[in-house]
Length: 383
Image (cartoon, rainbow, N blue to C red; front, side, top):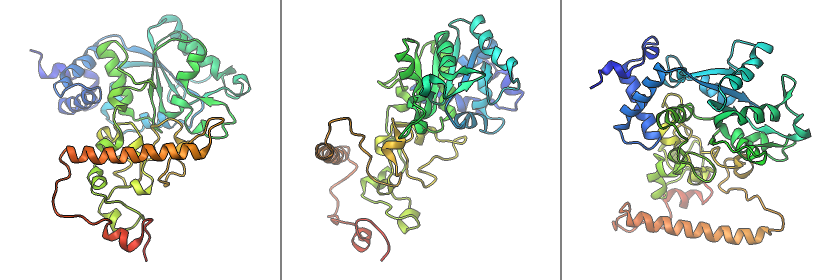
């Protein structure tokens, strides 16, 4: 049997990290990748083994972005398990964080590609900027598209962090003058057939990045992914499925106005535009800022930043309805009728499912509308 300290790499000890904190983090990673609680030991063994082995080389490229994903990774506090575990990577190039500059920085990319062909990880942040044949974004005199293409061809796998790398994110919002698009789809259009793992949200959750890296080291392969190349263990359920305000939704208790008594009681924010029912991430489980909180718990409706085309579809963010992006030749009236039927069917199915699950008993007769709705109107507002 391994000793307890065998599960705590020296790299973590010197940062003052306790074995208990380390194993707690490993349990979170295990849950994020769909393992049982006992999977924490497997994760700990993988991290410990990786720490004793030569560091996995990695290149972090940044394109059309605000550097928010780098900030998310870098400013999580010290000593932070998620940040320290990244010491198992040899992050040979990262524009925002590396000490080197100019030629000495740029040569790290070519040196890594030459020394570790098909053996390094490529972490890509930001949208691929394609306007003017890629000349709209140049890095060290080279087109950003060329830099990505050359780095991707030699990579073992690619992790696209944040919404911009996923599908262009806010940079690709209408009218998208820079021709911003996602890393995955653009690489496919260039004939690059390398595994791409998409981790949307704006910015990316740092725990997800660590989780994917640890899982890759643990299993030696990319995770199970959906049809948009997102890990199913992270993006397999909606925020609504795990939201702590879900009970209020089932009871028909909603916030219609910020500052109201209903908001103080923590009622559901769906009426305030929450996109939780249509957004697939595990934010309520993993949370943010060392698990302190997350958007809905902090009092904000989910704006759906984990969804495709989230800026165009979901703004204005406090609106209940999702904007429908019409393809050529489709009439809005037809889409409205179809969408209305789908929503109605979904609400009926939700009601039947809630009843079958036993969350709603017979009980006393309920009102057709709540006291608050009756006195304030369907759209809320004090009278």
